[in-house]
Image 1 (cartoon, one colour):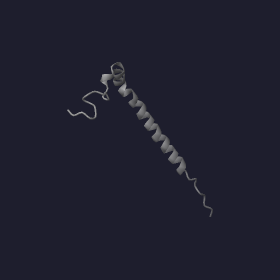
Image 2 (spheres, one colour):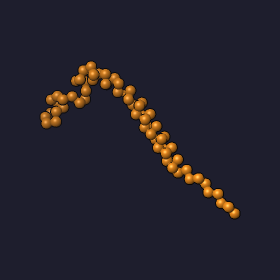
Image 3 (cartoon, one colour):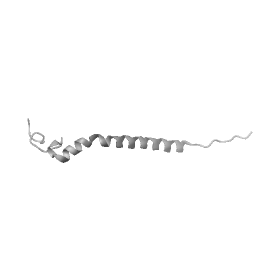
Image 4 (cartoon, one colour):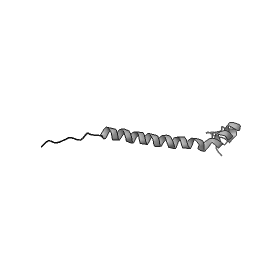
Length: 64
């Protein structure tokens, strides 16, 4: 009796899973980009709208 060996597709499955995971990360990242457009335009208009401003209340050494 002759046995026929099946082709091992493990590498193909790993590459396919990586491509699907990469596509999912790209889709989530691109959808989150527009989420902060309003905040970005407000900060561009007036820098004091930023949470990272450098004033007395937010400086590292001062106490409240």
